[in-house]
Length: 264
Image (cartoon, rainbow, N blue to C red):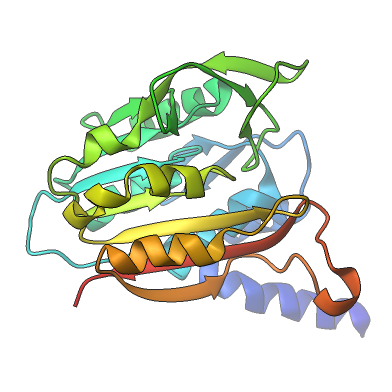
């Protein structure tokens, strides 16, 4: 009886992915086998890094469509900071086939996967750069954790690489129809640096990460976005604590929020 219930639950959960991946592929992904590094989406064979986070991204991007926006511009200018394996770029290109997209992914291995995945979809007109988004153009150290969690760090270590950076502010001197920032930590510093140029951005998505050992900067971040004229909507990106009064701090982040900014 338990096995029947479990199978029915799996069948039910699959329904939201049915238009994206075959059922057999979904069952393989649910096993979360570390050696599984390829999958199918929209009948295209692509590379990935981790089954769990791949399914999470499919749900967020193609089921919930958290980046969906409308524009009268047939060739909207989109800046994707933290493109990971390229799924967000694929989503934007399905939404606006003629979009002008600049994408940044600092992890060299993951950026190579993103290039491969875009090629599988015949996407050749995206400017995908293996660089980190920052407050200046100075090189930085980047800690490689695989999947979705790599981040800029202060010191060199065994899992770090030296990476080139771009100053996001330099890319906001003309109109941007959609700005996505999902970079695992330094988003506050970057928003602060380019706050005076956010007036040129029509829509903004920021995933805010608060490190458990650091002061939270969410209040200041929201003020910068509000002062730039955005109407804001907030949604929990991940449940880091079930009982915050008791836990006080999450295991790594104590707060992750999806921040949607748009203009009326």
